[in-house]
Length: 201
Image: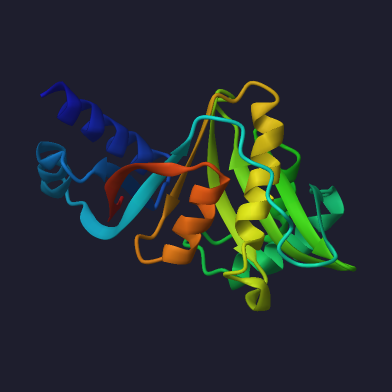
């Protein structure tokens, strides 16, 4: 069908561009879509909750005394990179890549500081200003599972909803129940459960 033809063309283009891996996310009820992806060599990677927020997030009390949240500065790139690397995200990034993202105009970064230390960050993708994507959240080890990440996300999204944003989306592991509860308090709700698949090009 047309969908399969478009996907094959996209995979061919990705190969020509030198992309090494391609990832697809699909609703768990979309069995025909899952079958199409499997037939093209995609392998199941993980399952996620897709959560959605349609209103300006609630203001949350800062969960740690002395914590401050603000827009990231160019000089924060190295500290953000350290947190990013420690968080174990799939995409490998260099400090220079972080610097590029801080200034490209389509990503928004907020950071939390505790004294002189940068202890958390969030990265929002704002390619579509009306529908913001929470791409990454990183928190220093000792402060994880204390509501710091959701506080930074809430602060960052408030600024987006004060602008053009009408919705925000994020993905969470179903097993991360503390994070699910924390984001529900901010204003997110479960939108759907999705399968994530991947294949090399």
